[in-house]
Length: 332
Ligand SMILES: C[S@@+](CC[C@H](N)C(=O)[O-])C[C@H]1O[C@@H](n2cnc3c(N)ncnc32)[C@H](O)[C@@H]1O
Image (cartoon, rainbow, N blue to C red):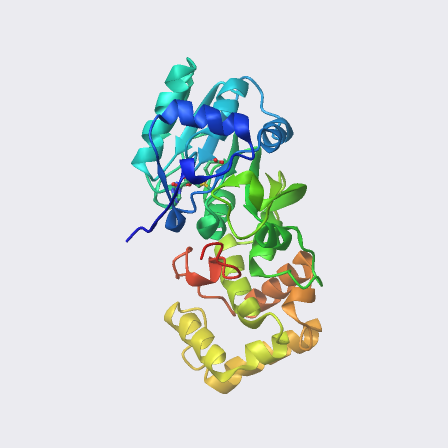
């Protein structure tokens, strides 16, 4: 069940102009739902920076995920040819449509009143969004792995989450999500944003980043890659030797490779394990931790496994638990 939080009217206006405008536009009090990550960005300086850094062309179609009451959307509408906004909360959709109408911008706005994770994205040039933090991981994976090419995604994210996307091999924040994103995209830091710039204030600070899909995508089977990184980063602090020689893991891999007809019937557990041990030893990966390896080194290890007929189970739902952001719950 959704939990109601505070009224707009209960807040001291830090960004007075924006709030006055919001009050005038919606004419009635509104409740923000924590469970939907409803933290409205009210600082005009941050809104302007996001739009400016996104380098929107007047001919662009912008995709916005979670437009909320439309503070960002109104600015995007002014800068672009059209905005397609996907919003799960019908109350927000009504407010957004009214605000666009009042400014004569309604004809440039298409609203899809659905869950962004369960909606096929229409064609667009770039994404600009203050996304609900609870769905950051699956949403970014969906954008990068399941969406047709686009120029860039300017995203306002929880600060710790943004740090992970920006991390490099060897950094303590470097994890599976970072490795999966970095295979296909470059991530640029834009600015930090204070929790006080939102209404209501979340418990954590935020950061804006720009994700740019790479033009030349590495030659790797993406299903295999994601399944492989799931195994490698199962415990990112363990050595690959310890991870891959774990008996349960060997049996899981053997079962998948047998079921798929990828290894012969005669491949018993010992033989199969020997293959894995050899790949790790000969490739020099046995005592390495996945979070210390570069993308190229990980790609090399995957190709060594595939060469000897060891493939990874890619049948799991792409939005499985491993892809969810598990660090800080931003709400009470
Ligand atoms: C952090 S607020 C951002 C509001 C607005 N963009 C702003 O900057 O002021 C996130 C918005 O995403 C919406 N939302 C939450 N989950 C969603 C989902 N799965 N699909 C689409 N919208 C969602 C919420 O209702 C909320 O309006």
